[in-house]
Image 1 (tube, rainbow, N blue to C red):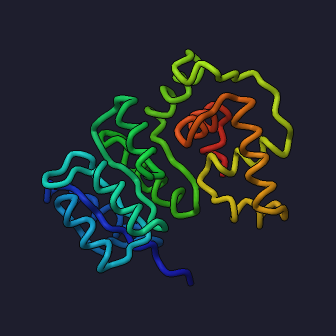
Image 2 (cartoon, one colour):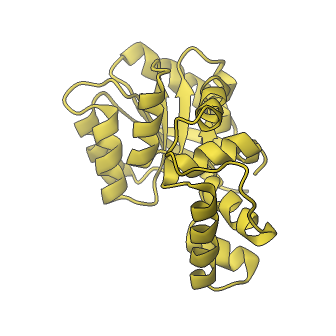
Length: 218
């Protein structure tokens, strides 16, 4: 039987942490390995516990969740982070994804959204709260991305296949192994697809993935 996912819960409110512990510990495939009340404690606890997933509040004292996410991904690149926050603004979503988080869930969403996010990013994917993903896709359609973007540009089937795997969180090596091609070929397909579509970075690729419906079909 697979070992349950070990989750570190970070929030500055004890009552929120308690609620998250009850929610997560109630699932057969995950368990709360530890808790942290601020960003500095997150880094300390993550170093000591080596969790699979960190559920990260954005607004915390001492070091906020955004700064903690950046620092944690530098120290432990393999740890997966899902932001759990009340902030719905696009700027927060973009900043958190750029910092290295793979999930974004709103605190007022149903509890199942957080559980879905934990499972999705544990499997190597990306998960955006549906309330957020709609606007992320809208951002692609209304031209708020780089002016060079051409959403209707044609990319090849293999370029699309590679870009999809990038969008849902797979590394170049993972993609190469899955498609039985070299890492250099993966990089070439990715670069060509991004150039044709005008995508300039991770957030743009995730936006495009949302528009294509890739993030919920992994």
